[in-house]
Image (cartoon, rainbow, N blue to C red):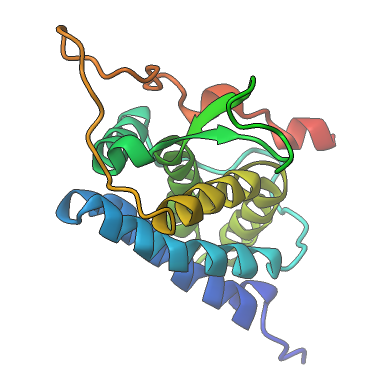
Length: 207
């Protein structure tokens, strides 16, 4: 009789579950923390989550249909808006991959709050599936999480880590974003950037 534990119960998976749970906990309770305090917490959680995600086992999915999703668009918007308010002027950053590029030249502006909300959605959906205790469901949750890490949220996490590092050691004060007369902040509206609207169906691509 084979007594080898299923890969979904392996040490690497359990450790990833633990750090993903911490990430979601602080994201959900961001309103209770100061912005600079939260950034310092994420400075420690994000590198660990990246490491643990890179060690997830390479599994084969059981089911042909996609995994069930739990995080609603309203959840994503709530998390993103709270984080955006907390991070203030530290939130937006130029998304560049070459340090030689002048950051004042043409570049894409991203935000820590948007990236964190995207990562939160994947982490929360993963955790809720994993907590079902059904091995097949847990297996596919790990499979999808690893795939999304490689193709989607891993890069977002790395980009946010760079922005967080730069702000923490810049000595700058975290200020509030100026608003116009209509009460809108000067940054672009990202309320409709829900991850499922932008992310392709990876199962379809694989097939």
